Length: 294
Image 1: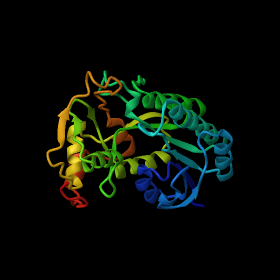
Image 2: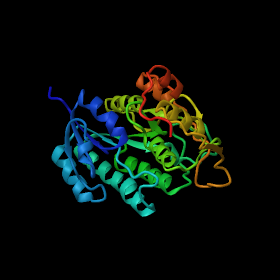
Image 3: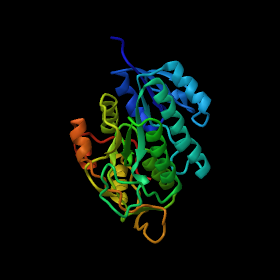
């Protein structure tokens, strides 16, 4: 049998850095990106504009992939509400419609930020109630995807981190510290960061399963944003030199959901894999040394 074709959108993203090499071992891989094609690490590459329905349909109907992992998105800080709606919501709708047209298995990457943080821990099928523009765009994307492609798997994830490449959040912290700023990390915001390699494995497993609907995929360990930030800075050997403070988001940032704990029992059972927490991942890997003291 010929090797099935897998299209991965967001191929040049942080997740793509970990997902593409793993996917290339199992599939005839095609990675889609709108910017930074030089960051495509494996497979062939294509480019299309997610906000252009005709462009999305053209590429997918020409490729006719057996499966699509839709990971492309505009993240907080990368665009305004209109841009997030255009890319995250409408772009996802276009991908799902094209996937349904060609009969492709669709795995759509969503976020824990579709929740408001008032009713944790969240089950896999908990209804979304977003607090901010990003969450609203992703919640609307979930609805659009499942309406256009009811057999799709919608994966709600938490913060992504890896040990071979610095994640976007930690990189932002480092930039602020390097510029001499004091960094405040929230001690009242709860997340379950997911190791990029575990997430990549989970997404690829879902390609071969007939699960439909929403599924939480996150690390087992609950950490405050402060705890996670400190662990990542330590992993990368970044010494804040006394410029790191503990703070609270409550009462200051009303658009930040405070408690985004997710139940992951269904994912671990369905996928037949453990979703390790941050401490477990760090304990089994040697430390990198990329930065010295500021």
